[in-house]
Amino acid sequence: DIQMTQSPSSLSASVGDRVTITCRASQSISSYLNWYQQKPGKAPKLLIYAASSLQSGVPSRFSGSGSGTDFTLTISSLQPEDFATYYCQQSYSTLRGFTFGPGTKVDIK
Amino acid sequence: EVQLVESGGGLVQPGRSLRLSCAASGFTFDDYAMHWVRQAPGKGLEWVSGISWNSGSIGYADSVKGRFTISRDNAKNSLYLQMNSLRAEDTALYYCAKDMEAVAGSPDAAFDYWGQGTLVTVSS
Image (cartoon, rainbow over all chains, first blue to last red; front, side, top):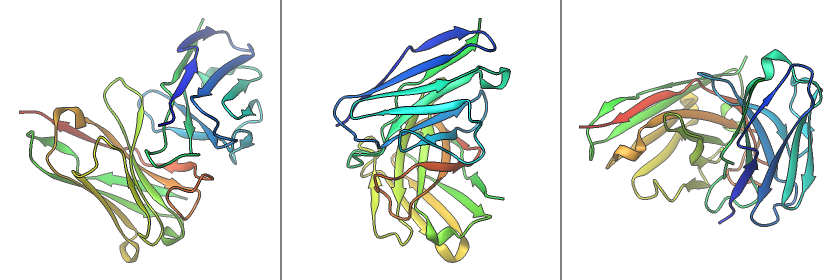
């Protein structure tokens, strides 16, 4: 089974900061990696698919990169509405399902 | 506007059954795979099950295999999850999610729309 890890598990940042979240797969998943944002009490929202493709309607301050086992979600200038939990998800090997990472909570410093 | 509305959740005793439904609108339902994803209170996301546009490909998480059954009715634009032999660890908010692809299990899959979820609580 492919395991997904994220780091850090949480971070505190200020409005305007550049934020980077890392996701690592236990084996190569090519570019089959998606990123979601979830705010408290709300459903997850797709931000990035296929490692670097920006979902329609998502602000351009969000970007994704990586391939193989190491991936990054970057928020270039953190906005108040970006405080949330971020999850990565692999779609390379779905024999055991679409594995999500454990999440990274971004809160206000 | 895409809408996914889940229903059927509630309080149920261990060992009993429950059937969740998801009513879809705003897109051509039978063009896309659909999934159920759950989130235990205060925990992360866990994929539960997925079904292709034509029900030809179905998958389950190991944690629910043999107990849960996913199905869809394209004529009714609806997705279902039959949950049997429920356990305390099945307690969670269950989300219905639309895939960007038609085939469940496609590596190009991503879940681009989600419902607001229906809460299942398994307790005696």
